[in-house]
Structure formats: structure tokens, C-alpha cells
Length: 116
Image 1: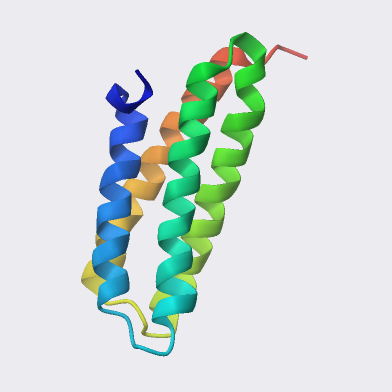
Image 2 (image 1 turned 180 degrees about the vertical axis):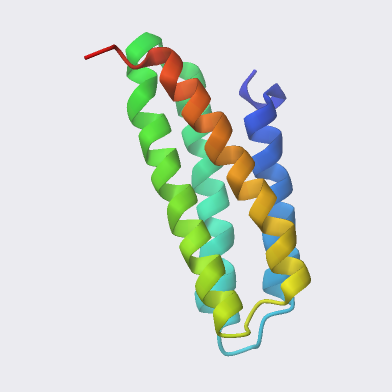
């Protein structure tokens, strides 16, 4: 099943880290930024599920969208850290997880992309 895969388990750990980070955000940005960051991880989990269900080259669009979700998450994390809405420890806890998901998604995607 898809929830047994390394990439899915990494997204779960990322979701846990983002929940903890969101809980410690200032009240005025928590609904906007904290909720949005967690929503991104939910979308990542759904995309991993959809990619697992798809066959062959049909997996590629899901991995492409997953990479976009990761990029959006990384952007929001960088902005939250730069504006001091996110602690250095929370930021450093999420970076390796987003990078790991991106590496795994790129590796899985490359298996199904046809050569030009």
C-alpha cells in the first residue's frame, strides 16, 4: 500500500513537524500560514496515493504536482522563518524532510518519464 512507502512516511513526519511549528506561530498568522502548511502536506499525501494507484507513465503528472507542492511548502517555510513566525529549530526540522520528499519524488518520477 502507498502508506508503507518511504515517501509517504516522510510526508507524515513532515506533517507532524508542521503541526508542531504551526502551534507555536503567532496567533495572527496561525490560520493563514500554519493551516496552509499543513494543508500542503495533506495534498502531498493524496498525490502520493494517486501516483501509487496510477500505472506506468500516468504517475508522472502526480509526481510533477507533488514537486510543485514541495516547492510551495519550502517557499512558505522560508518566508515564515525570514519574518520570524517560525523558530530556527522548527525551520531546521522541516528542511531535511522537504528535501527528502523532493529527492524521492524526483527519483520515482524519473522511473516513468520517457526519454526524449
